[in-house]
Length: 216
Image (tube, helix red, strand yellow):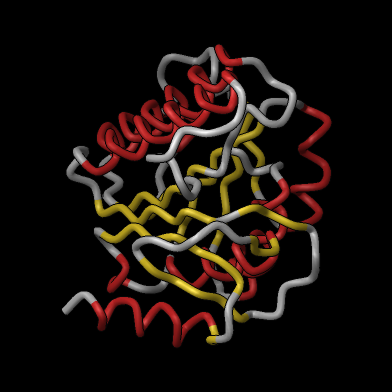
């Protein structure tokens, strides 16, 4: 499978690349800065330069792919405006590029608790931006999956997770989020689904399968 990743230099994406390549997939990574390219090339990722915040049309950057992942984000320390132009508008531009390029599969990294405003004004704008991006994807007609991790940590992953439509707050290592993403790209059963994601006690494949079966 050919997969284009927006935000390919992000922490989760860089953990995901070797997992996808090990499964036989090829990756086209959209990045903003030239200095980010060398690390991606070492991993076996094809870097493509495009600023999803300022570029109106992402079709050329996305290229010919079987699936896309939105893993981009304005990041900590950014202001409210960039939460909208990156986290919301960037995700919507990627939807438009998928439609233009005939790509049906779209996986989104979202966040838990978007329906419960909390934190300062900037964080609430972030929640709004992510919620609006998710809704645009739901309404897009694409084969989407939206994963909503809890608080992200840099601990080593253990491959054990908990999945549900709604979970209480918690955390999960970025490495385990990457492992879940790698599994999702090979699971047609997750198309049309969205779920909260935390560390847990079930193996990733089993947890996803249990969640799918719970919806029948």
